[in-house]
Amino acid sequence: MIDWTRYPLNEKPKYRALQRLIEALIQQGLLLAGEQLPAERQLAIQLGLNRSTVARAFDELASAGFLERQVGRGTYISQAALTQMTHKRVNWHTYLTTQRRPKGQRIRQQYQALIQQAPAGLIDGFSSDLPTELVPAFQLPALRWTDFVKAQELERPNGYQPLLAAVQQHYSSTLTVSQLLITAGAQQSLLLVLQGLLIPGEAVAIEQPSFFYDAAIFEVAGVRTYSAPCDAEGMLPAELERLIKQHRLKLVILNPNYQNPTGQVMGLKRRQALLALCQQYQIPIVEDDVFGWLHFEQRPLPTLKELDPENVIYISSLSKIMGSSMRIGWLAATPQVIQQLAQIQAEMDVVPSIMAQQMVTLAMAEPQFKSQLQRLTRLLKARAQATYEALTTAFPEWQIEQPRGGYYLWVQYGEHPRPLTDFINERVMVAPGILFGSSIGTFRLNFARLDHVALTQLVERLRLIFDI
Image (cartoon, rainbow, N blue to C red; front, side, top):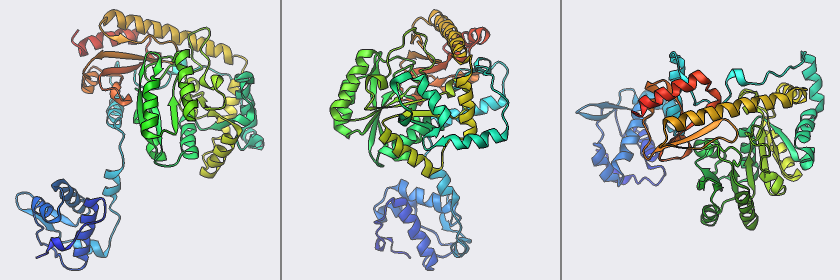
């Protein structure tokens, strides 16, 4: 009989320490095949553990083949346990079950299953890209393989020279080429910033609600996130200052133009107030402006980067225009920051494809580039207006933000979230607010994917979902 009290478990996590103890006892011949282990509750008392800790250790050992659980009888050392110890193999179950799963993964899996079923009349207001019919039809010249090979001669540490020049020209005189870094999209831009400027364990602030709420990118970088509430003008300065003092923030991430998911535009005074606050505490701001191309106003507000060139790192891309598969973006910062991030990018070997860089360069140089963007913006504005009018007419009690750019519309329909299955059963895909850190009944809708027919059907199905 094993005296379990002789084996203090000082290692953490405790369930893993217990798992290793039992494996060691089997290896030493102190636990034999067919021998019964104490009941979970009894063993937990002897070792001073929670029963759930013992249960998890038993689960891991059973999955690896060391234990057998017999319903109504107890838990036993398996007949194959000694063989397992002699020919130990990787317990893949441990890796697969302990890997972090974002909260939104279940929702995305359900939607993916729905898409695979391809039910007739599926309304997709969830996907985060343009429908094919709205993607601009840029006329690119025929390219040969040798063209890409030659293009490599024009690559520099911070990107393909012609593309750098095209991006710099787009922003007029506000940026120089030395302040730009070409990346494989906005997500890589942010990851480079997190890994290049922060130490694992440091903290950043994001908006609430925010596209970044459920993003795994922060865990990959080992960075803690804290959400600051927003009002109609954007992130609340008082809440941000509270987080700065409480958690010693090292970075603030803002999406001031057509914010994802709300579509809101941060007011000029709020921009200035947040910039002044971050200047006071000497905290840099990362400005996510991927929707900045798609503004419905004649004169959009100045970017944070324009208001404070020295303290803001600016991120943008063309993925929201040319399609999500075109993984080309850029970030703008001081030359010293660009140099460091370019070095990290090279060391990680995640330099964007020269083929993609050259194609984006050709698209930006295309004579109809600006007119194509203007056409896309007009179409988006029309769909935004039609969606807003249809929903506010059909559901006057809902709080709906009227889009001013981008292609998302934000809806608050009540205090309690509706079950996702209600939407799936009616073949409607929206992005529920829980994905963005909203605890009340909200959803994000991609109005760019709604033509007149889809919009009419959407209203009809939402009436069924909400019993209206």
